[in-house]
Image (cartoon, rainbow, N blue to C red; front, side, top):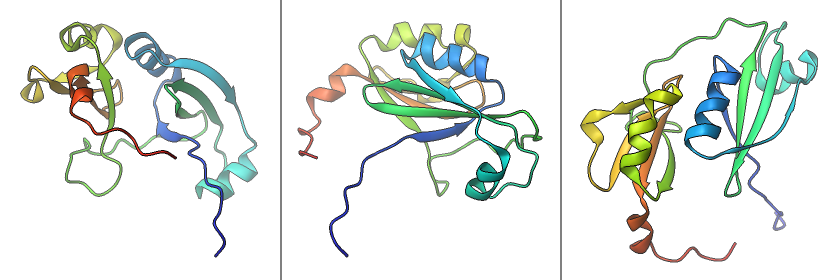
Length: 152
């Protein structure tokens, strides 16, 4: 196989309420609205493996080059899964560095999330977004011990 040009595109996150999730990710974590779309059910159903009707509304938020796609469905009953845990196969969490961990933790509930109290230390903590997605918060001091990123 020839060397293909591959570029990171986005991470998709199914949400129960777009407005509530936008408030959390934009207000608490500093993501910025980029764009949104409502693709046709036929193409969406084929790509996502879902039966029609679907009614997908995709909202794209961006932070430091990371694109987060919020997937909301107007014509589907959402299925709540169990709380994600760190030893469950698949995507476990998003991770962000913050300059003032205590300040962010104090504001989590006001933005509709929750703090995983047993995880809180001086340097790190886990929180959950309004739909239960795990997010790891690391103090900026963590960046001092991380080796430089290799060139892309």
